[in-house]
Amino acid sequence: MATEQAPPTVYHQLRAQGMSRRGFLQFCAYMTTLLALPASAAQDIEQALRTKPRPSVIWISIQECTGCSESLLRSFEPTLEGLILDQFSLDYHHVLQAAAGRAAEAAREAAIKKAWGKYVLIVDGGIPQGADGALSTTGGRAGIEILQTAAQGAALIVAVGTCAAYGGIPAAAPNPTEATGAAKALTELRDAGKVSAPVINVPGCPPVPEVMTGVIAYYLAYGKAPPLDDLLRPVPFFGRTVHDDCPRLPFYNKGLFARSFDDEGARQGHCLLELGCKGTVTFNACTVVKWNQGTGFPMKAGHGCLGCSQPGFWDRKGGFYAPIA
Figure 1 (spheres, one colour):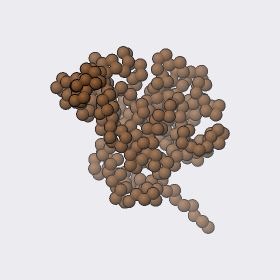
Figure 2: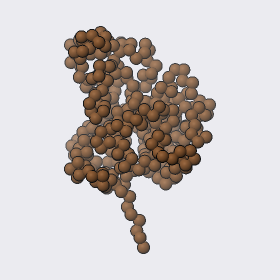
Figure 3: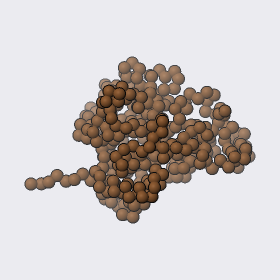
Figure 4: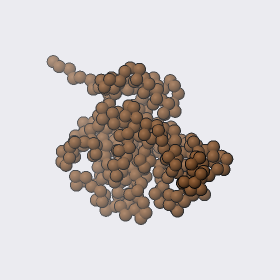
């Protein structure tokens, strides 16, 4: 009688793709550093990825522009694309799946039923509450209904991007669709005890890719969300302002500010505060983890921070380029 084969772990998937044991341990050490954990935590992450079955991931998209998915596919080694598509079991994703129409909807329902209580639910995009949710539908079902149904069987809920975290651009004044973030849209179900999974906000427009990798690695290692701030953001990535680690900080401390984007001060790397940079009031990992395989971020490219990981950044008085007080 044939015995059922044990589901593969993340470690086995990585090794099957040619990653060496040494490379795997380096990845665990990198995740430990990224999460600001003590060096000993690398053993916890290594143990979890080596022994625990790879989790099922169900990714639902509601009011979004696909920018978050595009960004998250550009994480560096091992890529988030690889981590989710090959190491995790991506059972449903609006953008990446080959299925469409009824087949796609059936795939989502089957994935939810099969992994009930165990899957990671990733939410992408704002959640419209107006007109009973009819302003954003998939397969004839309101986006908020799809979210609320999927959330009840999730072990972990990750709101990816500022739209999923706070409502984002869809919630910009006058917010005609009454868009909000995933956590708020699930309030009633949580109060009723129907949703027990922790909600983690990973804001940004789009979010920093490696933050996503780190959040899921932490969850696999410890079976819970990392420490969160009052906006449900993981503290290891959102515990410091963009300003705190900006390479232009020494110029700020000396009172040296660029007066235009192409003046001599800007070319010398002077602080961009007077050109509307919101780095002093924005919590994110942009200047530490950086973008595009660690090569850059807005201030390095000569543009100020827009504050895209903060709620309401899209409606800030004076617009993006008005200096903050």
